[in-house]
Amino acid sequence: MTGLVLGVTALLSFIITAGLGFVLIPFLRRLKFGQTIKEIGPTWHKNKQGTPTMGGIMFIIGIVIASITGWFIANGTSGGILSGDTQTTVRFVAGLCLALAMGIIGFADDYIKVVKKRNLGLTARQKTILQFLGIIAYLAVLYLAGDTSTIVDFPFLGQVDFGLFYYPLVAVGIYFLVNAVNLTDGIDGLASSVTLVVGVAFMVICALLSFTGTGILATALAAGCLGFLVWNLHPAKVFMGDTGSMFLGGMVVALGMGIGFPLLLVLAGIIYICEALSVVIQVISFKTTGKRVFKMSPIHHHFEMCGWSEGKIVTVFSLVAAVFCALAVWAAVLR
Image 1 (cartoon, rainbow, N blue to C red):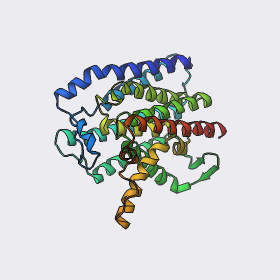
Image 2: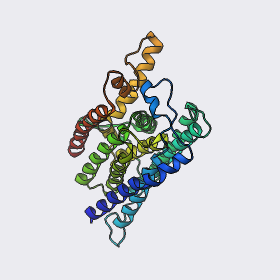
Image 3: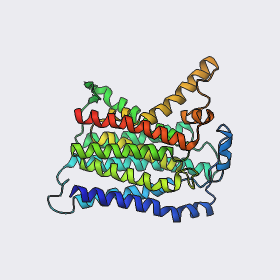
Image 4: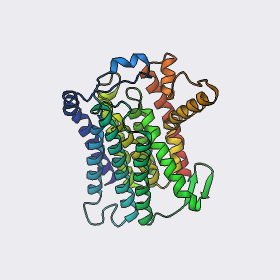
């Protein structure tokens, strides 16, 4: 039964996402929803000016439809494999809602950039407030559903009870990771390739540890990213925009929280974290010393400036993600 559920979920997510490219990309072109390339970016990115953005809508639709379909198949009969498991249900639904909330914030940001012609989109304050509102609502739903443990597992190290500090720390961690995924989306196919690897890793973890609900989300996520890569590999015919990257961030968070092991994302999400930290390091270094640590941040642009092709960066970063995701699988099994 589980194999059928995951198979249908994967097939639907891939077909819907890839298939929507034939419809959505021409539609975005007609609306002139093209990407505006920032002046501070690599100069050779200027030839990407006008490439349709907001393409993340493709995999958002594919992932959501596939996840809900997989869920209903899993519970379609009395005694379904997820029947009676309230906490799993809440984690599944709340996880999807968190991802959608992040995606909606990203859509607002893209809309302002593309339609209102304000290249920076939402202000940092507006985006932060909206994201934290979504995160707080997500954590509140989990708490009210009985997910009240404040114990955090550290991969390979053991457990620590954070008590009252748990929720502020988790909220900040979710905020950081969602925006880290957003920063990873800077060259053709990078965010979708890395997230494909992360999704596959959580598929394995969920299969080994019998987290069927989260496994459905992981399967839909991986297959949706694969379907999007049909259109997003270099040279990209469409960009996911903040609409897509922030949705992906929410989905990745939902996987870690869904198995009750959020710090596993430190391993599985190592590329996202390095991307975000490179920006933090660059800003702190420049403001305190006037010098830059990297030729350009986020770090994928540093490698571009060093002469790496976009394809090489995507390949190497995905391989690094795969190695750390293997460690994440090991840590999850040893938990």
